[in-house]
Length: 245
Ligand SMILES: Nc1ncnc2c1ncn2[C@@H]1O[C@H](COP(=O)(O)OP(=O)(O)OP(=O)(O)O)[C@@H](O)[C@H]1O
Ligand SMILES: [Mg+2]
Image (cartoon, rainbow, N blue to C red):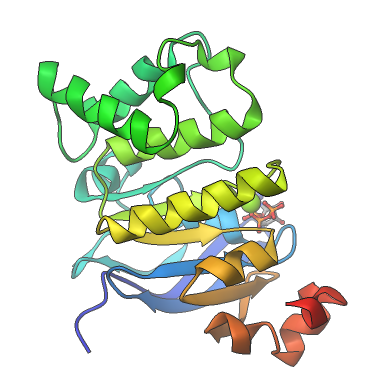
């Protein structure tokens, strides 16, 4: 098996007396769509924060493209090609959609400038369905477009691995279908995608494999079909939903 693009080993994150992540280990292959699910407070966002260097892990290893990145600051991790979107969207609200995405193009792995950056931004706005919104202020966007803007800003950094934290939260069913096809298209363009999602059926429909966290512990990992039938997953998280999956 080729070296995975991302390999996490025995990752721990402690907040005072709370062990938000305990011994989390998994690998993601290049080109995979890898899901992360679990109840509220399970540690999903904390996992992404540690991966991208927004929070230092308490211990453990994170290897990205064969190199250790655990403990590196966020800007260094982004430059290496690992980026995430935020569960609570964080646009620069009084800047246009285009300007928001340009920031990603300037500070990411590609470090693009001038016409090169503008071309790249225009292409990303088209790809994420925001072309018609380029001149709108971010504060004027509805939630569906704000989620797309988070994805667009992250894509503008030219990542190899994109971590999506609940990009389907707050979307209506047709927007969820559109988001799923956008995620597939992103993978088909050569990226590896990790996605945290509360919409279990949406994750199961789009991911190759998934990981389930509960109180910071991994309780299952594998292909969606098996994971959704795992007894611990059914009790801890899915309840009656599992039968319909
Ligand atoms: N910066 C922090 N300081 C202290 N505790 C934190 C911090 N961030 C998260 N926690 C705690 O760590 C645990 C995991 O939180 P996290 O946000 O990672 O969960 P989550 O799985 O993303 O939940 P949700 O589905 O609600 O987004 C929770 O108990 C949370 O209160
Ligand atoms: Mg979260």
